[in-house]
Image (cartoon, rainbow, N blue to C red):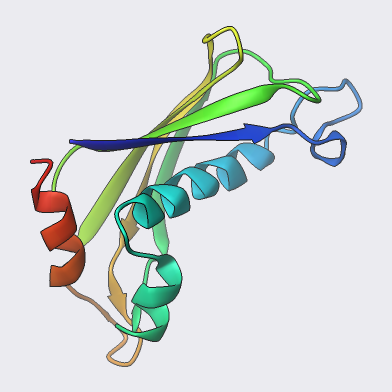
Length: 135
């Protein structure tokens, strides 16, 4: 298993009229978690796209809202890759507040999509090499 944490502070413009983090923003926070998790491995979405011609479209997402996050809260986005990817990669995400209480959790599944061929392909070997150390 591989995991990575990144912190993010809730900005005013991300809250709703009640001062809670707007529910639609959690998907964006999940994206921050997975992009930074890939970056922490020494890879990047940009490299996957521009060098390897691989896109990572979302194919499914499941999310559970536990308690609200508020304006100016410092959140920790904990992201895990629990199994080596094949044609798909699943990120398990938990978002915690400063009191280390769970705010939100879920999974998001993406496929490796060869842009030129317009088809789902196996995970690129260079990414698997980086991940194998943790499995």
